[in-house]
Image 1 (tube, rainbow, N blue to C red):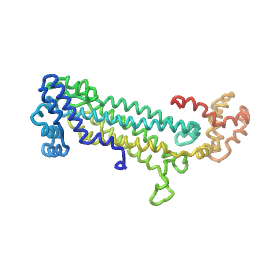
Image 2: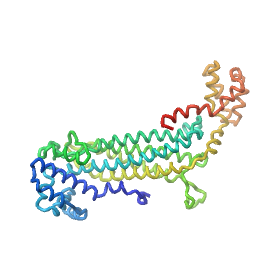
Image 3: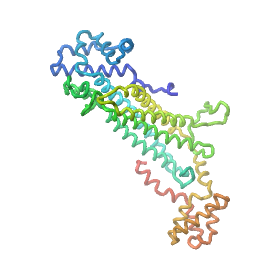
Image 4: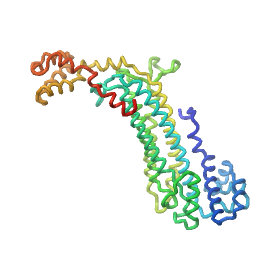
Length: 430
């Protein structure tokens, strides 16, 4: 499943190579500004910039002995740089580079997810326009309610996706933050100008105040946003799963000619991709809870959040990226069956127009409570006994006092229910 995913950009963000390279960039920028401030020799900077490199294998080898990843990283870099390495990491603590790098990597991940959401938005907009007038039954509590159009359903998803784009942009802003303020955030051994310079170079904002770490409410907001996006996809996928049910079958996932749905039953056409999206959404929501648990750390920091984030941040961003990729394809190729939609709208023999009849009676002067009772008793005769709803209305003496046959017939026109579709769709430029 995920291992067959062919979009490697998100995975690369969370590689050891990218993380250590990002930390190395931060260390080099810190040396640059320290040299400008006269805190280290200016001639050391070009040496550091030229020679500073690392091998992930060497870092892991050192870490296996000392059990500290950042010191292992610094030691591995120092082996290449030589004597000038003594100026690297001056006045910094591990979290200065680790958390700043993490903020940069989350920003990278957010950029990819925003791009994914924008592609999904474009597909939804196209399909909404395509099915602007494709009438289908709207359902509340799973029961037929009144007509809508498939275009309206897609537009609803489009609206939510646009909100998710804005949420992701806000979450990116929340986590695109760095800090180089020392062991407890007081700049005791580092000039605040170093932090400002490095963050600017990395395209990050400097935290107004940090402890040893950037505060984890930011990461919780980021993870909660991923969970909302995943939940939106779950919602959309669940709708398609329901529409694909045999007894509804108004739409279904594209089924490749060579695809097989069941090892036992050759007739099966299952909504497997939508089910996968719904399942993975549960993982992302669970990870968001773990991020909320990380907010409360002891005093100026503890390390309980670190092990959690090493799992939930890569996993959740990769999952959401993957979910958007596969579900965009589902919507793009979704098979739609307007004839089935029409047949389903007619399935209840006109019961879906009961409100229209009710309002017509009230408009003619009937008391609403009475009118409701008259329409309902005829509706129940259809539900429970299969009687002809429209004919019974025409023969009901109470209703005939207010409505002619022609006025009753007018109540059964689906176009009336959909008269404001253009108004709604215009809000989306459709």
